[in-house]
Length: 190
Image (cartoon, rainbow, N blue to C red; front, top):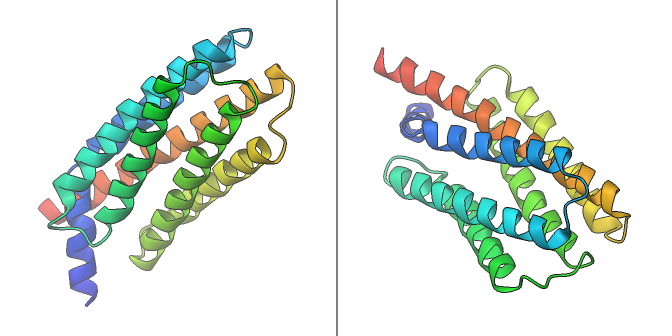
């Protein structure tokens, strides 16, 4: 049974670079948002829409690439679909107000954070070191998402700050996870 689980995790490590790319995109967008706090929410909506569309496509490709060898490819597929649909929704509604946008972003980030927590627990079960760091990143992302959802009417600077923070946290998780998956893949090839 444990060998089957390792094989599943090893298969997920085969395409380790896709979460890396996704993580770098999330971090880059988070830094961009930190550096442009006066940007209007219409512009942020376009940036977020493109980010969600792009990372959604990458996550869907990752899931499809691992569907035969991974027991957990469904989580990646679900996350990719959620990101992609959020992107489409944001693109199709450029007139989204400051009140609605934090809900889109908050629920998207919350879902990704729950995925991060799930992955960290799977890594723990597989006795992969540093799983607790991934758990911490997932929890921080969930807290940032709850802050956005709890009070979406915060002043623009605060919303921009928490949105940027959440993107950076999720990006860090994706990058960190990709290196863990690469390590698993390298171990399997040795």
